[in-house]
Image (cartoon, rainbow, N blue to C red; front, side, top):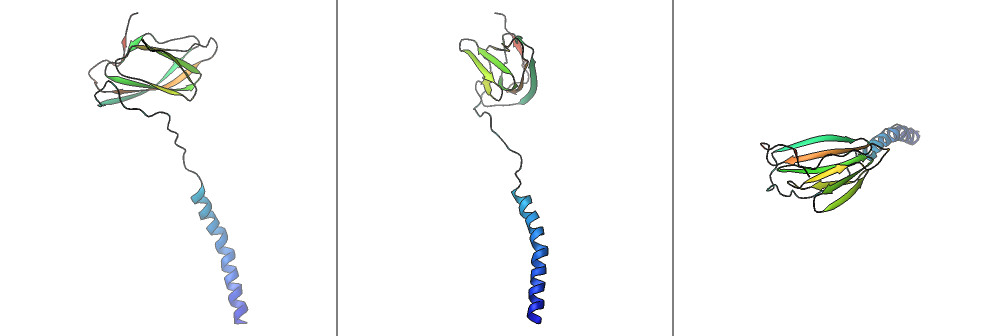
Length: 143
């Protein structure tokens, strides 16, 4: 009788413990946030110094473009999250960045960005890493 009682108590304990333990196991196997590195590159033309970071969203209507400009002492990272954006750096040609792609424009380089689509909007996250807060963020260059 004692053996049957022990086995019953043991089985009862397992019956209670297994569902509780499976919840802990499930909680431990659920994935956390997914981090996808988009771009990693050293600073250029800034003396490896960052005084300020400016994060913006730029929206390009169909067929619109930013003027030729530069960022004194500021590197620009552009990550397209909707549509496509063409980035042209003076003397280096143009690069098409599609949704999910990113590019870096080193400090002091004259460049522009444009949406070449006649019907679709484009949006991009823009991050400026500034080495010199005393200089203007954007200087328009006449061409």
